[in-house]
Length: 216
Ligand code: GLN
Image (cartoon, rainbow, N blue to C red):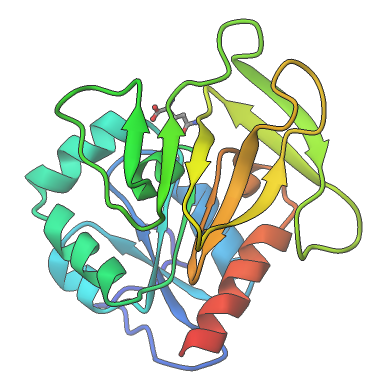
């Protein structure tokens, strides 16, 4: 295991400056989130079981395949524990597949796929269609200064509906999907259609780690 990954066994120490943040490690780009969180001064911990979830103050849901992660959440008996933590106000951040999992309603998914209802939103899976299946663009992101964020979309979802308590953080600036919502926040839960973990631009992770610090 990567030496920079803390776990209860390797002695993650609670410290308000270096919050212990879990990364759901069932499938997807876990390592990229772990690296980004560590660079932002958090203590990333891999979460594969309920006891590991209980030891973290916040959770990142990585990009990957939302239906596979959904199935594994059930197999690893994490679905209800994660839902319960979200209901209790645990901060969370999901990118791409993680955004899909955090939705309260998902369109174009498998009928047996489960979601976590961390944000009052309807998300359409694989929404961008064949022409622009995967692409990159620069977009303005509410609250982030120092210029636009480079957004990498890989068979990404978009948000079709947000509830009253949900803040839209970013939309697609131009092209066939112009205006589509691709980053949102409801309280302490943040989701992006794209993958800030793969660009080396740490501003989104930094914003999330600051949010976790403020919540502790
Ligand atoms: N298309 C994937 C899904 O449905 C998400 C893609 C991603 O996370 N890059 O889960």
